[in-house]
Each structure stands twice: as structure tokens, then as C-alpha cells.
Image (cartoon, rainbow, N blue to C red; front, side, top):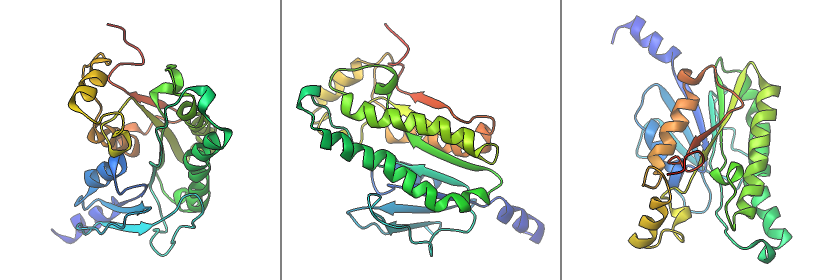
Length: 245
């Protein structure tokens, strides 16, 4: 590679911070960017330590409920932030204690707020900053036993739109609203092939979402291909929120 091409390559380098990058959708997002020399990825893990086998990926421990980011690992300029931590707790409303609502809210909303406030100066230094959250199809389409998850994710959708307005035009903020995705988080709902088929058959596209489906959507929202999108909640849900067959 000649010197001009090398400089151009460096100019295109993007720094991406992935919170919750050790499993499920977060891990798939990390894998999407692994070994792509145009990207440097910094990903957090919580309980289970992870080491990187890729030159452009670094992992660090973080408890989003109380921990401070290790800014020795955070680049001065941050081009993308993906907040992945979540939970799936499905119970009848009358059995849910207020403390359970607060636990979900702290993990999925307050944790996101805490991280964004810490890295906002870094995001503002980017020429194309982008933030991606995760909501759920259950916010816009009511489902039985989803009050706990839909309440906190509904707040994420509100945060998405309000923050997108406040941070425009410098930083874009969008969210993805999946239906049931085949991840470790959903394992208790998808514990057998029969359960997987039953849940897949509820969707017009007759299949479950995969972590790669979500990682591809994240990559789109972080890229310049979505440069005219902000404040949006992108449904990646097998058609279940809009189609009836």
C-alpha cells in the first residue's frame, strides 16, 4: 500500500464502543467488525472475562449499574456507541414487584444514560457520531406478560427520540426493536426445538431472529448509509409487528 492510500485508510478509521459485547447480540456486533482494519472496537463484558483474538478488538470489564468507564481504553474520538445490555422477564402483571421494574429500568435505561454521559465528549469529536439502542417489538405491539420488559424499553424509545433531537446535527441516535431472537438471553424461552418452531411460526417470515440479523442492522445504523436517519426505531422482527397472515 502506498503512502497516499495508507493516509486515506487512517482517515476512515472508526472507533466503536460496544457495551455488553461478550455474548448474544453484542458479541455478534463485535464479530461483524472483527479484523476490519477500518474499525477499532472497544467492547465491555460484565461477569465472564473475555480476551480478544483480533488485533482491532479490545475488551474491558464494566458493571453498567455502578462502574465508571476505563478511559485509558476509550479513544479520544468515538464514532459509534452500541448499548446492548437487556433482560427478558415475562410474568403476569400482578406477579411483578415494583423492585423488578426498577431493576430492568436501571439496567436498560439508567445504565445507558450513565455510559452516554461519560462518552458524550468523545462522540462530539466525531464527524459522524452514531448511537444505537435496543428496544423490543413489545413496545409498539402489545403482548401478554410483557409489561416489565416493555416498560423499560418504552423508556429507551423515548430516550432515543429526545436524545436524537438534542444531539442533532452532530450525533445521530436510533434504536432497533427486535422480536424474539435466538440468543442466550432467550434460552429459557427457546429451550427445545419444539419451542423454537412454535415461536418461529408466530412470525410471518416463519423463523426466529438471529444475532447476525441484529448485528447487520447495527452496522447499517452506524454507517454512512444511514446518515439521514435519526430518532428512528427500526423494526427487525420477522414482520410480526405489522403483518397478519
